[in-house]
Image (tube, rainbow, N blue to C red):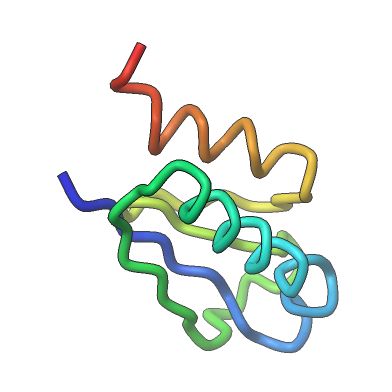
Length: 81
């Protein structure tokens, strides 16, 4: 199954951590050779709960770099265990 990750590129989310999160996601996908559609999107008005990321349509709020790796492991590699 090909996964889809959408990362908010709105100025608030980007400044609050999605700039760093984008790099972490790109590095993670390359490290584990995961076939994934990674897209950016504009603001959807949930700035207070940012940085926001969605994986396979499920929205995650307040995603920091520490929780991001655990989230990616659970959502993208969880089926391997």
